[in-house]
Image (tube, each protein chain N blue to C red):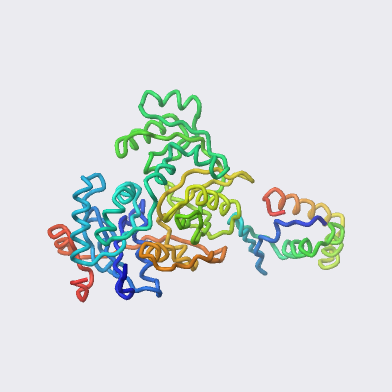
Length: 81
Length: 359
């Protein structure tokens, strides 16, 4: 996964509250979103993230791939990534 | 000069905390919360009905002042009287309309023993809203398209170049977002009735309102600064809720501004972040009304002003603060007796604490 420097400016709480220290914007995500952001921070590839989520939550990998792409595109749109 | 550090007396103007709050009450609260130097605080009010007149938590004394538009000799005479009677040492002016007086009569006030740490006349001229484009070049950032109008006849040609939605603002006060020509006309009339021309018409930039406040040391260095994003605002664009942020682009704008102008005293730079682009909206040569927020973040900027005005060694190291602190403004009602108006209207002075009658 690319090195997303924008993530370093985020404060992420365990309950899914995300605060961008640079812009002052705040967002909410769920527990899976937190897992994904934590894995992005650890430089996991998209494929590794999808496999990890599939294993943790016993979900279909194909569905996860589509949802993960949506989630990451959404983060890019919001300027978080 | 030598001062009794235990008994510094600071005069603060702009103490009306109404729907368009002036910064004075926030400045007084900041000085009250200072542990470095105990201060006696005199509220310098232009009207007995300014809400700060009754805030005995923050002001020891209230003195009425001649209006900023009065003959300067009346203001100097009044300040001389206050100096002699209450040993006033420092004034922190907080209203745009009076800053020119304090810049021009800085030396005379110093001779009276009243010290300031505020911008010079040349520096004030740079902040004139109609010269925003020059300032934007100095700080290397964009401004919204704008037209300056000096008469009603110029409105239509301005509207052709900048159609609604647009922002219409007075040169010193008032700012309205408008979506139609009808609204533009209504607000134009309102602005010129209260403040006259010129009136500025700007493209409405959609984005996040972000501000930086700080103090320049007069030699190109910042003595402390804090960035805030406005989350919600009132109908006239005043902050209602906000959050502290760390924004390097804003920091750079402030640094360039202070370096180029050798800014002395407080400033507030207002910008809008639209995507990656930052637009400069205006620079205020004074503290904003939310100054107490920065004090709560650990930066007591009014105290730095007092120290520098008196020539004390204020901290010159940048002070860090936490991003993510939330600011929420509240409305609060207080009840007084009608007789409380007696002293302020008949004597022009009011002692707010009985033990401070001679304060």
